[in-house]
Length: 266
Image (cartoon, rainbow, N blue to C red; front, side, top):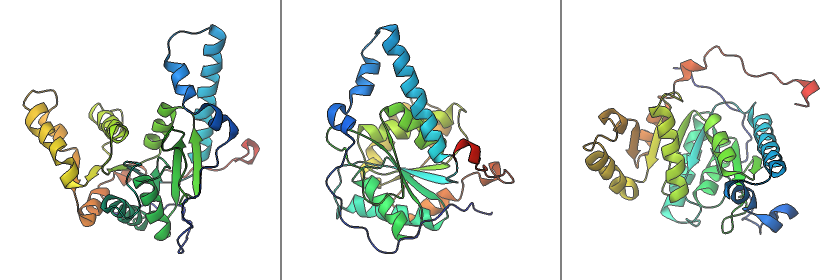
C-alpha cells in the first residue's frame, strides 16, 4: 500500500520555550464573545447578517489556508498536561510517528498535548499545523507550529480539524476532547464521513469510558455492536501506526492535488 506524502518543514532543533501570549487587540478585548453572541438567542436582523458574514469569512479563510496541505492526521487531547507529564511525552511520540508516516500533524494549536504533538512532528521533520481558538485559560498558540490558523468560532474550527484529516488520534482530555472524538465517531457511524481510523491512546485513562460503551451503551442498544469496533484503544505506538495504515488511501489514489491559482492570490 502506498502512502501519501505531505509537505515537510524540517526542524531538527527544539524551538524556544513557549512565550507569553501575544494576542491581536480584538482578542485581548473580547475573547469568547463571538460564540456567546451567536448562541444568546435572536438578535436584530442586521446583527444576524453580520454574524453570518463573519462565519462565512472564517470558513473561506480556513479553506484557503488548508486547501493545499495534503494528507493529515488530527491529534486531540487536553491543554492542561504540562511538559514532562507522561501524557505530554506520549503526545510527543505520537506526533513524531505520524510525521514519519508522511502525514501532517494537525492539532487545536494550544498547549499541553496539542503542543506535544506539534513538537513531535517538528522534531521528526514533519509539518505541524495548529487551528487555534482563544479561550480564557488556554489562549496562547504553542511555539511548535509551522502553520497557524486562528478562529473565533468553535464549530468552524472543528470543521477544519475534521475536513482536512484522514485519521484521528485521541489522547487523554476533557469535555472538548470527548466532543471532538465523538463528533468524528458520529460522522463515521452515520456515513457522513469515510471510515477513517479513530485511535484512543492512554488505556488507563480511557478504559472506564470503553467499559461504559461496551457494557452500558451496547446492551441498551443505543449503539450497534459494530460501533465499538470503530475505535482502537492502545498504549502502543506500533499499534497506532498499524491503525493509521488502515487509512483508506485508495479514496485519494489518482486524485490530482489541488493546483494553486495565482489569480486567486494562492
